[in-house]
Image (cartoon, rainbow, N blue to C red; front, side, top):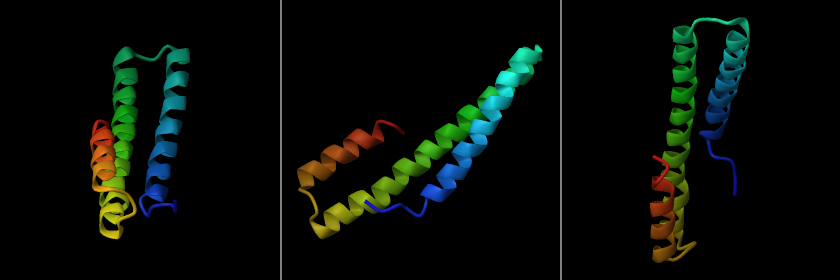
Length: 89
């Protein structure tokens, strides 16, 4: 399977979140305020959630649509995969 056009953007988002997460560990080690840490954790959580949504939507729009149009898999298999991946939204 080839890389999707959204993957480079998802990688950037996740690397940014990874950097934020590392800084949160430092904040904890330095004894920063819980409010500041909670705000940063929320930002990381949001970044990961948005990356996940982008990945799932991209899969539906490209992989599953391609599978239906090209007959790459049965309709039942495509529907089963759709149901499985939408659990992550």
